[in-house]
Amino acid sequence: MDILEVHNLTKNFGNFTAVDNISFSLREGEILGILGQNGAGKTTTIQMLLGVLRPSSGTINYFGKDLQNNREEILEEVNFSSAYTNLPWNLTVKENLTYISYLYDIKNRVERIKRIVEVFRLYEIFNKQIRSLSAGQITRVNLAKAFINFPKVLLLDEPTASLDPEVAKHIRDFLMEERKKFQVSIIITSHNMVEVEEICDRVLFIDKGKIIADDTPDNLAKTIEICHVNLLIKDGLKRLEDYCEEQSLAFKIDARHIIVDVKEKKLGSFLIEITNSGIIYDEISIDKPTLEDYFLGKIKITQKHENT
Amino acid sequence: MKIHRIYGISLRYLFYFRHSLDRLSDVFYWPTIDLLLWGLTSLYFRSQLTTNANFIVFSIISGIIFWIIVWRGQYEITVNILSELWDRNLINIFASPLKFSEWIISFVILGVIKAMISFVFASAIAYLLYKLQIFAYGVYLIPFILLLIMTGWAVGFFVAGIILRFGSKFQSLAWAFVMVFAPFSAIYYPVSILPDWAQRISSLIPSTYIFEGVREVLKTGNLDLNKIYLSLLLNVIYLALSLWYLRNSFNKVLDNGLVKVD
Image 1 (cartoon, chains in turn purple, blue):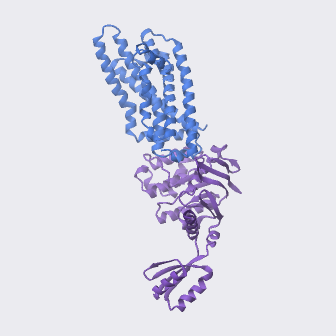
Image 2 (tube, each protein chain N blue to C red):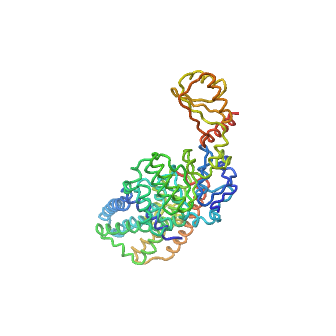
């Protein structure tokens, strides 16, 4: 069942079109990633989905109801967290969570705040003012705020930015658990491709306000033909370097390690040719194309178009 | 309209107030300073005058106390809106089910509470220092307070609309704009001493009729109710216009995105 349906959404700022006629949907319990370069239209889209930016045209329907005409009812079931918004700096974490809890129709506020504090490990900073917290702690408070109303739909704009890897992993696990337990539907924007690959069921790729790809992370990665061959060279590093240049293969060298980007189809002939050239390697591993490769590939294409 | 949401957003401003000692001084410190400065100045005038001395002293002190209501009514609105801009918090509150009208009501409630605290405090100081009994105004106190706070709200909503639309670069209006109305409101002196052109402006300001009324009650013990009706009429017109302007500014801000307001 589609919990969110977006039809022909457009946002113009004067002559500039930030979001250009996009349509997509979000199923119950689905985690949807929105990827794109800075300025692609991701945050503008999230803001329109939250009702804090009025679209120029198009419709946004949650639970089969139009956001514009059913704002209060819908926003009871929606929440967000963004690395780019602040919470009142001179209020404590407790005060922030308390006043925000009253903006929603929550039955047992004290219990809910207690649970949120536990999940997001906020005990030590509970009575501290936001101004005294580190960036990572503020991100955790922002996420805690996003879960205060048991949302059915969560919009997360760079939710784990500035978190250390252990806490980011903990948050990702929590998101997966919430999805599993309560069928929470999540839209997430992130520059952390590993994170997106790990948790997203589907990815939208936005470029210049348009959706240019909509598929699973695996399928998007599969569209990239290039894999990465990692070699620890014992002898013939210079010869391999020359060979790559000759064949126009991209490569990176770090001491004796070399990573060569090779088309999957040509992998066999590549290995035979370097062996025939007398290049000896101690270790070899082959990385399949990832979502990051897809992302970087799209950026390259975009930049090429801009340059021409 | 949900009570818990109005309570929630009011809590946000009360928490903010609790952490801002400078704003605590606005409630107690400035009224005390005004009362001391102006009260002592008028006591000096009393010693130099032979007629109407007490009337002049009490009308000046009453003016100070009643002006607090106008000031606080607008100040609660403008400074609380500014606090949202300083904290870049508009997106957090309006991504929740909070309605624009509930937000406005929270300002009104907090304005009334703080205006009353300042008013009672200043009245107590005035009684202790100058033996002025503010409750001697009797039932007239109710329309006086109500109409003055309405004037404060009208100014506050208009300034809030400007701040929302153009950002915190216009923040000084939150403190300064209401003072434009002070000389024309005839707080400490009768309208008749103003030049003709200024009297015409005064006649368009709702608080003028109240300060004139305060002096009338002080002098005669009675009040021409037309002053109340005129003040009410002007207040209703200005409140409607300022609320329309604020709503319009908010809509404009929604077109550009709440996150961009600063």
